[in-house]
Length: 337
Image (tube, rainbow, N blue to C red):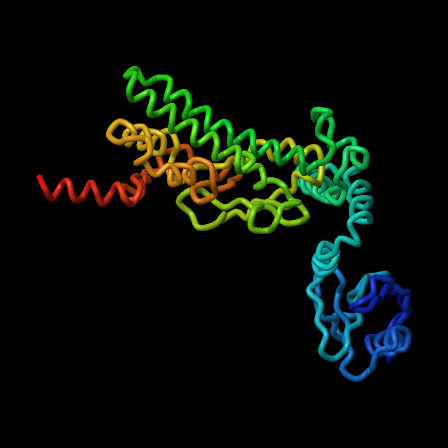
């Protein structure tokens, strides 16, 4: 026997469009729904759109009017509204629509937690990473020197500037050396390292998305992933950022660190100076120190939260400090003693 005819809103699994259907019981709803959405009646069932609860004969009579329902085929399932969210976020094609919806919700939202979620969603979806030049994305270049015409050029220079700062720290340590003979050796080593850096264009390639894959730390689109603290294999929080996407993210990216696993001030620079105290500059393996100071052999890109300030307790490899031919002479000298 039919119950009271009531209106419902129904949709299929793969279509967001909703249809109005009036039915007095679950059988009538299924029949009308399958006919409307062109689904086989055999095995068809209905779930609540909100949470995926299956609608049975007994449950149907408790539903209020205009309840949103999903009509499913025999082998189909529905996990609730979260499925729509996952589907929307899985494709960039819905980004503009999501931004507009989120802005509308944010304008009337009273909950601080939901305000934060919506504002973060909007900020992350408002992405102009596909644009590259100053003319295309003038807002991104606000506060950036006029000599930079592309995002890649600016971020390449930003990386090179960070790398050069490590060389400045070495130079400061060299200037503090008071013994003239040792200072001369240190200056020679410093000059050779400077030449190596110039040859590699100060390794600005790490932040430049136009570089080859093996030379950059980001994707072709400009996404960077935190590599985790010095003592972890990867970032447990999965931090990521695309500084090419907006001016705000460009500024936030400046708080990310290129962190030395073997610390430059506590280990690398002191080990280099000690080697120069005891050996000629040409006998010291400057390639090894170059890799430790300036390359991702020893650098990890980390979110500020993952940048641990405590001592790393990692030391330079004593077997690498001297060149191979000098090691042989040193071992022979020790045997003669």
